[in-house]
Length: 382
Image (cartoon, rainbow, N blue to C red; front, top):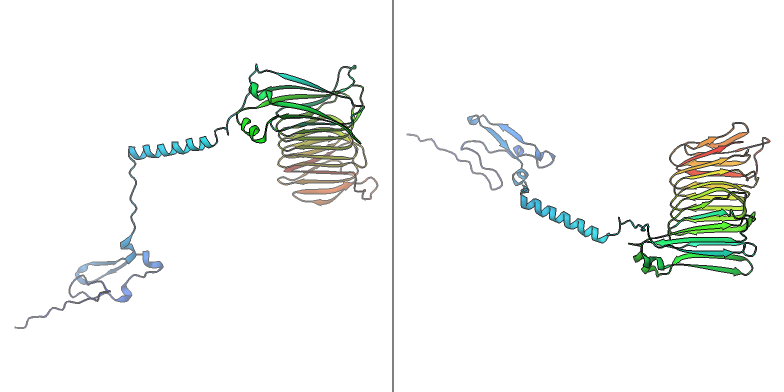
């Protein structure tokens, strides 16, 4: 009697064993590719016993399973605790960032007056140092009997102690040039002042009043180094040789000024609104809007009005013959004026440059109007 022999295939250590005796060993080419096709399942249907054979990449059998977070009450409470701790920590580092100082309505008021002879001292300088918040108003007196320049100040502070630290001095120079320098400052060291300004503030309003009989003066300089607006409002024609105004944080408004030599205005964090008649040079720079109305007829006028991130508008109310430049960083520049006698040398989305001629020839370098800003416009009337 012949007994049939059974062959049991034996696999090598680096091969998968066969599923059943007698089933052929998988060939090396049947293994899934470990390259870009390794993530794809390879299927092969075997005729033996009608089974479906499925081969998977070795990397699929070692998949990393991340444990899921159980959002129970304890986990939520711990998370909320840590978020609140971070908020409190940040607040402790910047406890004064959102603090707004205010001065009580019934706060004590201190005043002082400074008197300057305009016939002796032809230059006047007013300086408001760090920590002094307040507006400066320049005007002419309504009292015909006033003979001197009068500087009047009213001072308040958030606390009586802070008020006592407000100081002022007047320095008169009788050298080759006669100059009066008035300074209002906080009588503290730099570190003491920085610490005090975290929770305290001041308010100093200043009036510079020129006598009514005075029709012209030399140099006027106003420098506000902290916070406050500057306004010049003459109710009559008043000529000054030079006018310099600096405002670190505030607006500058010039109602109507007449300047023989130079008008220089800077508002580092604010706007400038001016109506002026200047013979030689106008320099205006502001972070926000710059708006100038010029009534000058000078043939040597040189105007530069610059807004760093706002609008710049210059309007000439007199007939203008000279060069102009309009530059806008965000929008197309605008030129509003007569089309006759106009020669445009450059015109694109950001720049308009050219000149107005009275005789068909290119005029000299001056007069010149330059307007620059995120949006810029030049209006020529007359």
